[in-house]
Structure formats: structure tokens, C-alpha cells
Image 1 (tube, rainbow, N blue to C red):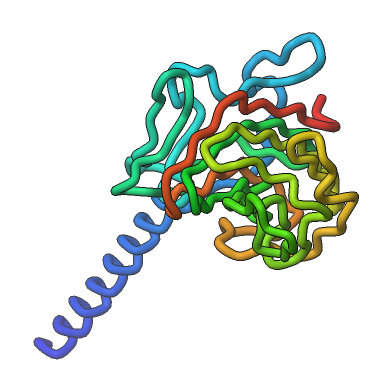
Image 2 (cartoon, rainbow, N blue to C red):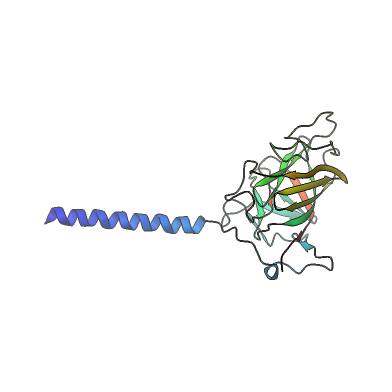
Amino acid sequence: MMQKDTVKRSIAGIVVLIAAVAVLAGCTRQSFDLTPLNELPEPDADGWISLFDGETLEGWQNARRPDAPHYWSVEDGVMTNDDDNGLDLSTVANFQDFELQIDYKTVPGGNSGVYLRGRVEVQILDSYGKEEVNDADNGAVYGQYAPLVNASLPPEEWHTFDIKYVGDTLTVTLNDELVQDNVTIRQVTGGELPGVVNDPGPIMLEGDHGRVWFRNVRIRPIGLE
């Protein structure tokens, strides 16, 4: 009888443990369902939606642990990361096809990136003055496509990305110069969030490679009703 009781207690303990693990997994699992238009901020007359109001980080979260602190802040109307606790920041909303405009600047030697759908990185790097650029330089699709030209300005100057991502086709302009021309994206670029490359996902800003600043972040979803 004691042996049977011991077995029953062991089985009960295993069941409780499995249930606890399932609960914890549910708490940390992220959803990457496409956010419908009616759950996004009101667009302007041209369909652009502001993702950053210049005052708060409402609508943004720790990209990898949504319930944890993100250590980003707003300074003088600009969003920036914490040097000592650099983490990736993402929108709460998920997007699929869109146009994105975003201004950024870095410190000398700076390194960051804008992740589209949370999985495809358009590289931010202090590449100013380089004669030859590769697929890890500023404006690259990291590890896949080098920029067509080096459009980098000096560090600590504001740069502007204009990005269009529809299906698996990506076009990027940096400082009014075309750096990616309708390239085909077939795989993630590394450092990505979970999911398949063409699934919906957030806009993610890389914040663990040194100080970086962003402003004028806005998006125009394509195909949302």
C-alpha cells in the first residue's frame, strides 16, 4: 500500500510540475498576430501612423520579455536606450506590409538596427567615410545584402530611413539615397524574434550595442482595412 501511495504522490508531483511549466510558458509566450487598423493610433490624412509621440514610450515594450523593464527613455523629445542596461525595444503592435520612416543617430562607432516584423534587420552602423561597404554596414540587410552606396553621414548627425516592405520585397532609402532596391527576403537575419520571416511582427529597435537615438517614427500599413 505504501508503495502505491508513493507512486501516486510521484505522479501527482509530475502533473503539478508540468502544469507549472505550462503556466510559465504561457506567461512569456508572445503573440505575433497582425494588429488590425482599428487597434492602432489614428492615422493622418495620408495614412501615416505615429509610433512615437515625442513624450512617452506608450506602445513600446521590452522586445524579448514584454513584462520586463526595457530601460529606454525619452530625452528632449527623442527616444534613447540606457548605456548600462541596453535592451531591444519593440512596438506592441504587429505589422506585415508597410512603409516606415524613422530618424536615428549614433555615437562614433555606433551599432544598432531596425528590425522589420521583428526578424529582418536593416543595419545601423557608423560607416561614415568607408570606401567599400559590405552586408554588415549601414543600410545593409544584415548578413544578406550590402547597401548599394555608402549613404552614411558622420556619427551624431541625424539619418533618415525610408523603408517599404511588402511580402518578401524590401526597398530602403537612407538619407534620400537608394541603398536596397526591391531585394527579396527569404530568411531572417539573426537576432530575430520567434516566427517565420514573412509572418507579421513588430518594429524592433536594437538597443544592446551602444547608445542610439530615434525620433519621427511613423508607419503606413499597406492592405489593412
